[in-house]
Amino acid sequence: MTPKLSWRKTSRRLHLYLGLSVGVLLTIISLSGSVLVYYPQIDSLLNPIDHTTADTKSPNWDKAYSTLRKNFPAKLGPWRLENTGMNSIVPARYYNPIETKEQGFAPLMVWLSSNSNEVIRKDYWGEYLVTWMYNLHFSLLTGTTGTLVVGYIGVASLVLLISGFFAWLPKSGQWVKSLKFKSRSSKIGLLYDWHKLIGLSFCAPLLVLTVTGVILAIPKQTDPILTTLVGDINSPLIKQIQPSKQSSIPLSQAILIAQKTLPEARLAWIETPSNLNTIYRFRYQTRNDPSYRFPHSYIEVNASTGELESLFNIDKQSTASKVKNWIHPLHDGSIGGNMIKVIWVLSGFGSAALFFIGVYRWLVRTRRI
Image (tube, helix red, strand yellow):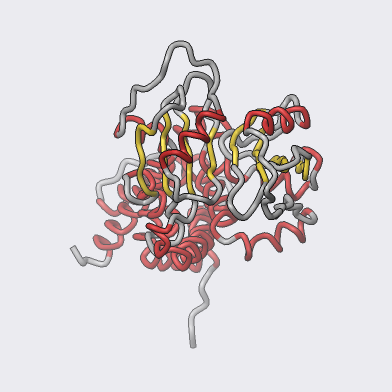
């Protein structure tokens, strides 16, 4: 007759088996995620560029676009320029360059001087440390398939966290005792206390990081759940208009047209027209948008006529759209300033510590070492 397992023993076994099976990959994802919390700052330290000018107030976008076209005449597709602030270097991206077409996502990354007169650095995504680390974190360096794997590792990690909590959950009246770091003589008991206290300390942030990571990694699988719970998700229009022989309006004029549409919003990204599409596309952060670098309001302006083609204001979209808008800034810690970022960094290292302590305790307990 097979002995019955209590829910506590079942939780412990599930926690153990999941930890041993996905723990290594989860540790890689966690540690790389800790690094990526500050990846722009890390990249600036590793690749220092001193090319700011005292008299520059805001980027000269016309000059920046002209410099890109002059230095990369064969790049006829759209450029994406990031607005990083006053008196700053202008980062730009060219998606799907022919040089890296076999690598999936590997845009050409370009940095312009703050006066927009020259290219001061160029590289390809994945070929310098922080972007290689990003690919490791998001796809384990294996492209689209790896992203799916990361998503489902995240699902397993949710079960790992929940089973760990229920495996620890004390009986009635023993909560205070169970939270103490006990004086133990055995190595197994000491390792258990460290594993327990680290797990409880980082349980909440790891749950947030895991849930948001799963949603980002496998949106096709998680969007239907969000839709069922909250409602439909609205998506911005993407206009496609063939270029005509009519001359294009300058980028600065298109920005003025877009700014009048959302006068209190902050311009975050610019997408220029291409040889196949005569549309300026702008990405704005509205007052209620938590995402600074990658906000979710879009404006499209016809480069030939100067007409406003479309407006997608995230503040006026569905509840589900607004909820999804919080996922990325929650996951990267940008939503709460340095305090949240530090907690996120420590959580990644805490996750790795849980794996190493757990495996070491299992090896000691089973007399493998």
